[in-house]
Image (cartoon, rainbow, N blue to C red; front, side, top):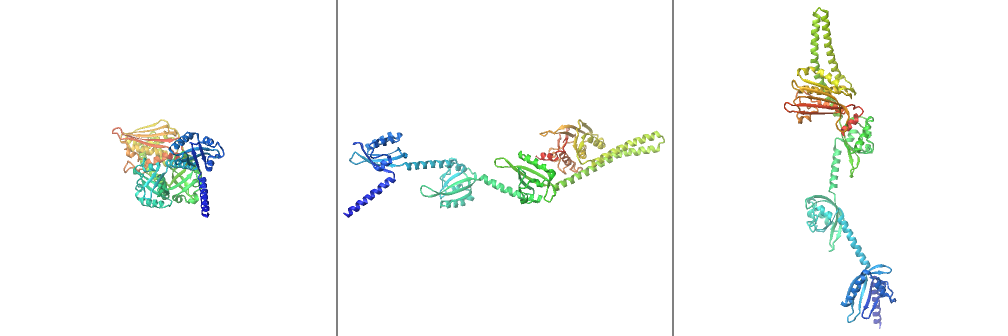
Length: 623
């Protein structure tokens, strides 16, 4: 008796556990006998359907809640299942409280009977989870395929299991047939292969990490990648490397270029400085410290005007305006101040600094100390001036010798003739010759004692007076001289420098032409060609000399370059060019060496007034 009670109790407990399991699993049971038009549902199934077992209309309510799109299929499946003895299908159902549900129904006919029994499983949570997983997988797949980074899966032995489109593009295999399923190690650059192999094995043991390495694609293109990897479980249980790799080839090249540039900047003998658009210093190299005396700590964050003399403060505004327009300033010569107040002459080259979007955010400046160079140039100019003095002295001595001989002869005649009228005539002629000597002397002195400040000047009278100085040489070579003073506008210039410019050009033409050659000197009003269109004067000195080779023309204005061999100093045209540029003008040369039709022309343009904008002219010419 006791064993029966124990058995009955155990069965009851088992049934209770089974009922609880079915309830927890959302499973209900059913029986259906269409032959006797009978059906019964378990309590769990009524709960799942949301029907009342005491309601005689529960079967009709169940049918009305089946999803309309599934109702005909449910009827067909039930009929076919009854005929075949087995049914298995899924359908959707509208629960009155919990909404749309997904059910799985399965049943079998009871052997030797007309009734069928089965179970129904509420798969809503499972289906929703599957749908969420599917959508998640689709979103992940879309993200992986559209990301610009390489996403790849590599097994522990180096086999490339999967790689996205961006990765295939990096490897040069758009279809993937040449790399997927192959060893990824073969694509890693030889010098990085061992460290990538070790990295991959470590990740496949469960670590996480990052690595930079080079790959060589199937087309031979080399790229530098930055890979971030984590372990990934394959369906077969093995662990692989899941990595996102960024192509940092350009960034790496830019970094290397930046490091090289930084090294060049720090080792440069020129001061290299950067500033923002407000003129605040943002960088300062070692040469700048040496040149100006300020350390980085003292000057960075300070305005650049600290090193600009008070009278040249306007330079900075002009420079910033030029940089803001996206223009550069090349070889602008000016003066700057050191920390101890010393003034030094510098040549500035300034360029805009742009951000990645191309916007101008500041300026980079290279300053070269040209104080020593300027002193050397001054010495060269003095040398040329002394050489010119010697040449002019020889010319003047020759020109003065003739009237002096005439004066001596006239005085001799006056002393040995008794007629008073003859003596008066001789003395008058001697006076004219002495006036000529005085004129030549004044010209010579004015050449060296002329004003050093710009004054109103005309080139016509200067050219005329110089031609009289060279008249003897012109007569001796029987030169056909054609002065053409068409218009002679007044310009603001340093007169003795204009006289030196004219003397250099005229002397060169006299030296160049053969006997009975031709020289044409023209002075006329002119407008500067190009965008500025300033008014001024054009001086042209043309001769019928043998011409100048094109290979030589580009060197004519260099110091110490001469075509006169042992006769010239090689400084005349260099000084002339400096004079012209100092006055904001320009000088050009053209020449032809055609036999019988050779010629050379020097053309000079000088603006009417260069005084108000000496600094601006220098800056804009540099630009």
